[in-house]
Amino acid sequence: MKSFKDYTPETEETASAEELTKKIAAAYNGKSNADMMRKILAEAEKSKRAGTLSNEEIENFYLAFSPMLDNSQRRKLRGIVDKLKEI
Image (tube, rainbow, N blue to C red; front, side, top):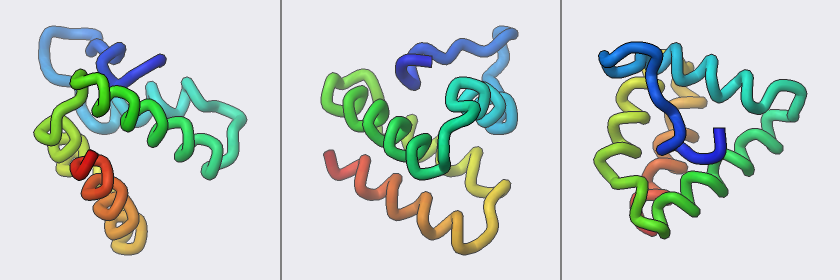
């Protein structure tokens, strides 16, 4: 997956956060968490600056993905989301 916009669900319905997570995990299989996070953030920032990723899409990702995280992970993701939304 080259950018968040490259993701297309298998059906016409909106993909679940679980499906998106599996796609992301497959794309970054074998990389450390830090490597994966840097790459995801770089792609998100690139898409945000190019105007192909909106604050609404970022927030929707957070709302779909955050229930699968523990409190610490959720706070960290919230910080990342807030930082991306400021770009």
